[in-house]
Image (cartoon, rainbow, N blue to C red; front, side, top):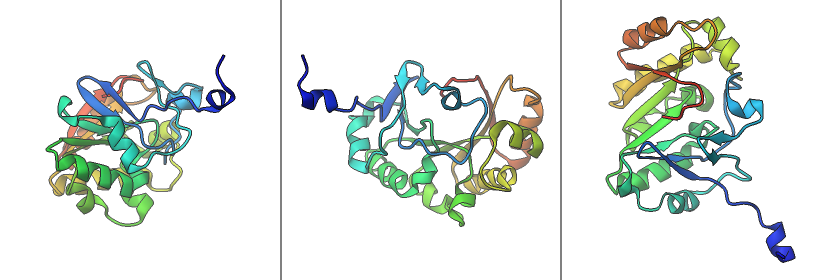
Length: 209
């Protein structure tokens, strides 16, 4: 039988997980959105066999240790069930350490970092981040508000402004939208991306990429 100490030990948390030849980093559970289609709001913290529930937010050294040898991956992606740019300083420090090893860095984000932090953070991100995938998920503000339920006013335009600024800073920017959400016009979402001068990719629900 396990000792009392073992019984009190917390289960091991998933800070880094491997999919599609990439390493994904799970650094926070906090988010600026409350998307109706997000599994965590429907009682699940699983992504393709990985449980992303966190008991506490990890520090820089914990995250780097969880990655192991980054050379085995095509890229390292900040992507969990929270918004990684809410932990901007940790993100930048981890990304900076990985960039020194020649690693390609991508962020999967809601695009609201500038709105949340009250300033343009894209210059800082551009120093260590190669690519940014931004969840658009709707072709207009009412539908975005319905599906994504942002906690801050003006989020729909803020994410588009973030996309434009990130692209201007030299990052490879892609807007994404979940195919199949009620009322979402994928072609209209693609038109927004083209207007902003960035790429577009439709996503499947619950599929990390």
